[in-house]
Length: 571
Figure 1 (tube, rainbow, N blue to C red):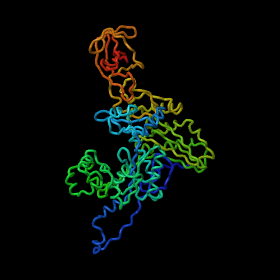
Figure 2: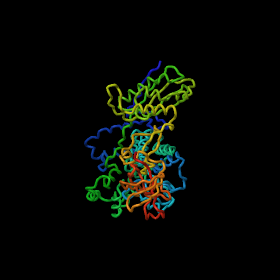
Figure 3: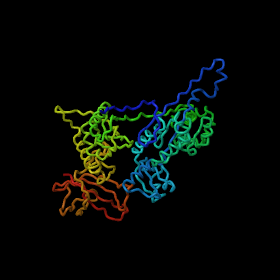
Figure 4: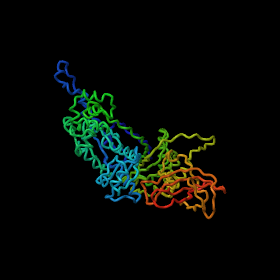
C-alpha cells in the first residue's frame, strides 16, 4: 500500500540541517539566536551603567552580521555561456563589451578582462570605445535576463542564511546573524560563499560588517573577504572613497570639490554642518543619511523577499516497486489540486524516484503553456520512465512543479469548449514528448528591426508570452521573400520610388506609392557594404502591390550607385 502525502513549505522560522548539494533553490534556513534579556538595572545605577554615547538601539544594530556580495562579471559570464552554446564564443584575448541604450546612443554596460585591460570603461559611449579599441566586439546586454539570474542566485544563497535580498543590479546582501557558526566561523563562511559561486563560474567580492552600508563599501572598495567587527568599523571604513557611501555621481563630485574625498573626511565634519547643507536632499544623495546607515545610527534591515510557492507531492511506499508509473495518476491529481488552489499552472514538472540503495533519478517534462490537467500531465511521460534503472526498487516517488506560472481563468461555452488554445498547446506537448525538444518549432518574433531577421523559428518549449512591443502593428507584407529580388529601373525620379521598372521579366508602372520608411542596419552586426534602406509600398498599374526598397542613398561614401529590390508583396 502506498500513502500519498503533499509536501508543505516549512515554516519560515523552522531550522534545517545544512545541505551542500547544489541546486537552484534554498535548501536550509537558520534560526536567529535568542539573545538573553539583560536584567533590569536599578534606577539609582542607570546613570553610571549605561554609556551615554552608545544608545541601546545603536548597540543592537551593530550586533548584526551583514554579508555583501558583488558579482563582477555576471552579465559577461551569462553572455559567454550563451555564445559558447551557439559555437560563437570569442577567444579570451578578444575585447568584448555589452552595451545598453543611453541618452546619446549605446553605452558600455559590462566588459570582459581583455576589454578592461584595453581601457574600455563601463558607462562610456560605444563609439568612443571603438575608436580606442577597433578590435572591440560589442553585443547587446540582456539586462532582464541578468536580473532574473540574480533573483535565482538570491534564492540559492539561502543555503547560508534565510535572509537574502538583491543589492542593486550586481550584488546580493545576506543577514547571517547567528548562522556563521554552522560554517566554522565568519572567515570560513566567506570562503565557502566565494568557493560555491566560483563553481558556478562567477567571480565575486565579499565583505562582512555590522551594517549593510559598511559591508557594501568594503566589498567593493576594501580588501579581499574583509571581516569587520563593531569596534573596528570606523577605522576600516575611514580610508574608503566617498563614493563607497552609495552616493550618486553628482553628490560625490560635490564632496570632492569640498575636499571630502574619503569617508573619514566626511565623518570628521560636524553633523550640524552636514545636516544644514543637505537638509532637503533625498536619501540617495544625502551623505549624512548614508553615513548614519554605515555607522548603524540609521536602521537598514535586510528585507528578504518571499520565496515563490513550491508545489510538490510524494508517495512513500511500504515496499519497493520496479515501475513508478502506477502511482503517477494519483500524484498528478494531487499536484494539480495544489496548483489549482493557488491559481497556478505547471510549465515544467519532474518525477524523482529514490532507490533503496540511495540512488536518485530525475525525469522532467515541459509544457507549452501552464497546465493543471492531470490527464495531460500523465501523457507527457510516454516511455521516458522506462529509461530509469530500478535497481532493487523504489521506495519514494515525488512529483514537483519546478516551474509554475499564473494561470488565468477562461470563460467556457455552454458545451464545455473554451477558446484558450489549450488543445494546440497539448498537441505541441505530445509531439515534443515523442519527437524531442528541438524537433517541434514555432514562429516567434526576434529582437531585430530588420524585416528578414524580425521573426524566426524557435523551440516551442522555449517560448513565453510574446513581448507586446515585439508584436506592435506594422505595415508589413504577408508574403516576405527569403532573398530580396533586384529590379531594373527604367524610369527613375529624384524623390520616391522608380516610376517604371522591370521585375521577373515584366514591366511595371507605378501608379501610387506610400513611404519612405527608412531602416538602418544593425550597427552591432555591421558588415562591409551594409547600407541604409528606404522602403516604399507601391501599387503597379496591373494591380500588383509590392514592398520595394532602395539599398543605399547617394553620397553615403560607399562608392556604388543605390540599387532597388522587391522584398515582399501584399496579396
